[in-house]
Amino acid sequence: MPYINKVVLKKFGLKFYDIPVLELIKQNSSKEEDNSVELEYFMNVNNRLERFLEKKYIKFNTTPAKDSEYQRIRLTPKGNKALEYIRLRDVTEKDIELFKDLITIYQSLNHKVGNKMKVQRDITWFKGETNLCNESILMATKAYIDYCREKFVPNLENLFWKSSNVFSTRQKLSESKFYQFIEDSTNLLKRN
Image (cartoon, rainbow, N blue to C red; front, side, top):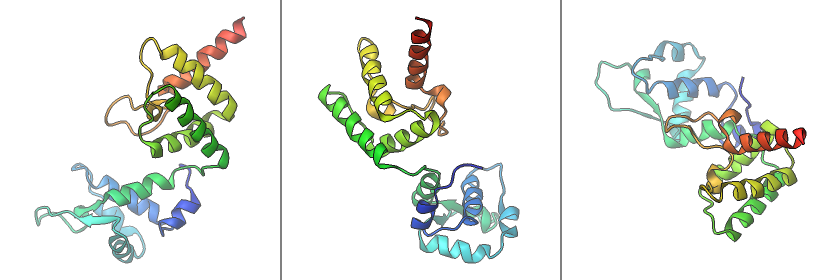
């Protein structure tokens, strides 16, 4: 089961048992899937749907009348955001310090920062996956910028992870060029 941030869950006014319902609704956008049967099995699903509508997490698609009521339900951008943020690990003071330090480095070198929310999210994800401390990440970032300077320096938004294609949303360390750089550098130091 993926990580669930209880603080964010509470902030969005959701309960643990709301997550599978929202997930099924998210999958409803696919023509191949009909999750109406699964939705009907959840207790008090209609009360939940009304609550989701009030909070603007869902909407009803205007599709042909042949679709059932459940098949017409779609997540709104706010609903998608809630599902995404619920899986974010807790941001610590150390993460915020690292965020500020990285922005300072990038701005001093006149490199683009990009989406600051994504940077904060990626910092938390990256530190959670690698257990690297701030100092190690800062040193690696400076070295990576120097290494990339002759080619292309990624903006800060894409430092930790950049989607391999437009449809990829799941972060994987194996797709992180920055992490690969750290691994290669570590292996080189171990050999010497």
